Length: 77
Image (tube, helix red, strand yellow):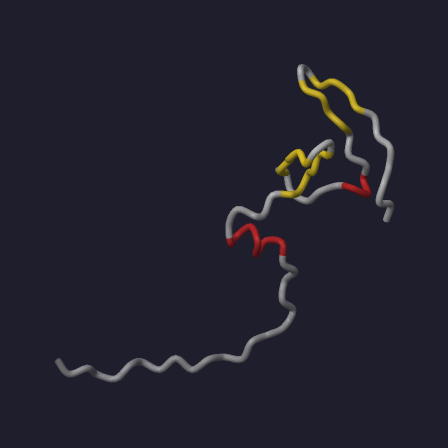
C-alpha cells in the first residue's frame, strides 16, 4: 500500500475539500480531524455502540452444544 500520494484540493461550497484515494479510504461514515502543527490528521471514529462493533465481526460458523438448563429447586422463606 502506498504511504504517500499527491492529491488535489478543491472547494465544496464554502469549504475546502480533498478527495481521498481508494487506498486511503477510512471505514464508516464519520471521521475525526485535528491539526498537529502544519499537519492535518484524519482518523476514523470508533464505533458508537456494542451493536456497531458486533456488526463488524464475521459470523461464527460453528455450532454450540446444547446447555442443560434445569428448573431451580424450591426456596424456603
